[in-house]
Amino acid sequence: MPKKILAKDDPYFIDNPKSVKAVQKEMAKHGIDVYLGSRLRTMSWILDAFCPWRTYVVIPPEGLPTAVTFVIDAARVADESWLDEDHIIGYGPMGGQDQVSVLSMLMKPYLKGGKGVIGMETGMGNYLPEGHLTLFEFVMLKAAMPKATFKNAHDIIDRLSLIKDEGTINRFREASRIVDVGHREVLAAIKNGGFQKMTETEIAGLAAYAMRKAGSEWEWSFTGGNEIASGYRSGLAAGACTPASRRKLKAGDPLMVDLHAMFKLGLGDHSHNYFLGKATKRQLWHAKNFVDLMKQVLSTYRAGITPTGLADEMLAFAEERGFQDYLVPGFEHGIGMMGDEWRIGLNNGPFQYWTNPEHVYKKNEMLICAVQYACPEEDIGFRYENPILIKEKNCEAMSRFPLSVNIV
Amino acid sequence: MPEKKFKYVSQEWADEVAKRCKKSLTPEKLKKLTSSLLTVYTKCPGGKTRAIFYKLNNGVVESVSAIEGTLPKAEFTVTADYDLFAKISRCEMKARAALMSGKMTLRGNLVKALTLSPIMDRLNEIIATIPTEF
Image (spheres, rainbow over the protein chains, first blue to last red):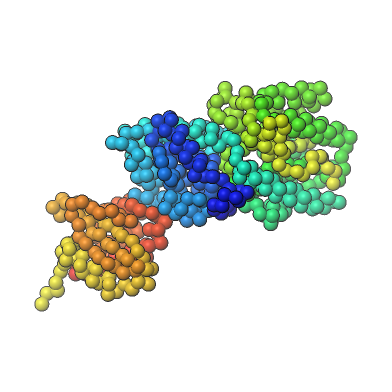
């Protein structure tokens, strides 16, 4: 897991104190006396440490924030975060040390006469580990601070974390380099008939081992780590979530390998597709559709376009080529430091907590270019995922493993 | 001659705690700790709140003071009813169990407090040896 990076000339340095000051400036602007963060993405962005247990961060109007995490992990988080051990404290099942007691003790000094505004993070999400404040937490905190007003304020962090800084971008680049190491290892293992007698879980494991050797901290995705799909599983209807199964790989099967690596909370996420041993003419037709589409998609991303604009263009291309029926009509999902996945941009679209299809991409935003091609009736499908950095006139695809559907 | 008894949570009792701690607890046993601990006794006989303030310096119990009125700041503050503290001081209950029942509250860094838990046990074992009038 990441260690403290305090040297400003380190390529992976992130100026967390600057981020905190930016949050505090926004708090003042929005009349928030104290901010209570609870989302995993907020922990990664503010603390620069991985927080797998329920964690909160209390951001005062000025000065350093204090994170509150499960006591069994507090010392490790303090060891890795830029904050010191006095600002990473533990909670546990003891009098005065439960979550509500500790949080209210930290926040009360900023509520004059008990009154004041607490910024909280609530909402809904399709991403399980999002970490919104639960109803129970809210009720208990409200009971502990009855005169305080709670205001949903996650937009502050969402807005500030949207455009990525150089340290974050470099961490994503390194995570992607590591993912490519995993892909090379998979290719070496399955080529020349090596896939025979192997299972999807073995592919996931050997990639994981190679990536860990190269410095990955975790196959970070909550979808089961490295996702591997062979045969009919590659083409599940509208499917884009395939935790590796014990299915044995067979000649003639398509194989989709979707690898995840984490480097200092930066995330690698790249999929590559194969045919095992042989491919039919029809399978190759599907593969060509997919590869040509991906070339189009990747050459289209740039600042100024919108998700819906890109989708219109790509679906028109698919229609022209006669494969629109096999395309899951989405081309990306959001990404940020660990815990920030799926929604792109702010919560300002027609459906609450989903990507706004009219979101206009800006320079130095990042997203995962994600396309699923699925033809369940022919037991075939392909997936493309790759972290991309939006630039003014194009995009940088961070994983460099060559785009193709290889027959191995 | 009957054994002298010290009135619980009095300055005389606190002095005896300090004396016995200095005699029995070496700096090594106290992990060369520098810290402060305030134990706050609520619902004392007469309805008052009283406190004992422990000051440790480099593993030496520097002072143990009985406090009434304004309470000083300490790195750790432990609060409970007088009766509960009395049970702990008679070794009828462990401080850990009292904390986990929620009847005793701790303020201060839990991570540090957990590492100091054996020291608290040693301190309570010494307190239990003091002939006390509750």
